[in-house]
Image 1 (cartoon, rainbow, N blue to C red):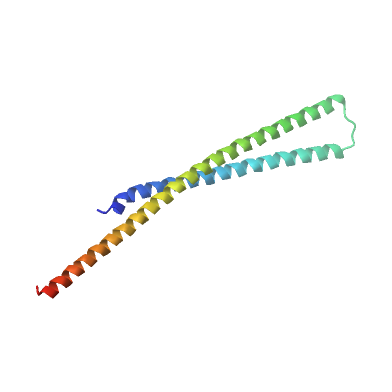
Image 2 (image 1 turned 90 degrees about the vertical axis):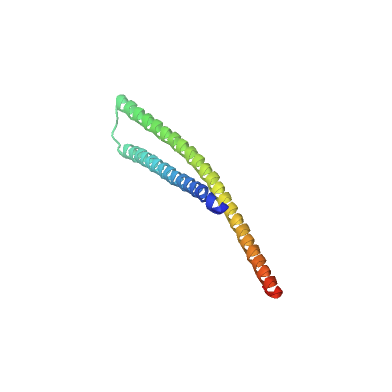
Length: 144
């Protein structure tokens, strides 16, 4: 068994780790996008609510104004919390991206090692073939 054949399980393992890390990046990216969609929905709702409230020229009682302001403050608070969720998800995404890049480097290194070993094995085979040819040629000249 050649050295490259012995390294094959290691190469497959590093490739598998790289693929798993890439899938984790994709999943994390989709989570970030989903949270951004939620944020846009909240902001759209706030905008619609404000436009609806300002377009009605009905006089409101102090209690209704207080309720409106309380609801608006809760909505703003929810939007801020959603922004925080997005930051957390983006940090997680960046961490997953770094892990993937590290696993990618390891995988590339293993492939380069195997490539170099294969080249060395090929050179050794060629040297052995040349040596055999030389010996055969020398025997032929000596009359064997």
